[in-house]
Length: 53
Image (cartoon, rainbow, N blue to C red; front, side, top):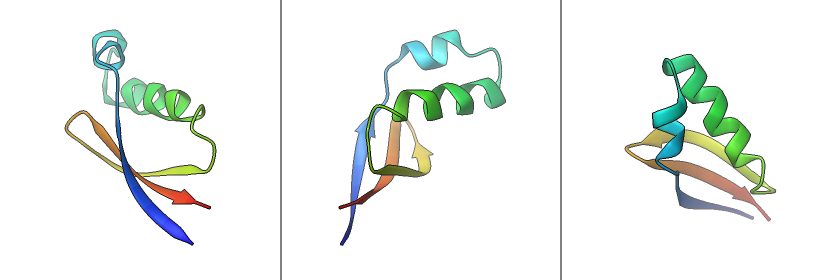
């Protein structure tokens, strides 16, 4: 079964990143703590994810 979820991303990711590519890497690293979540896109400060359960 596949579900979708919005994960609020911490502000420090934007404050730390030097450019868009680094921001993307920081978001992916942050999302590693959410086992089974796959980031589909980032909208605002939320990662729109698919959850594999």
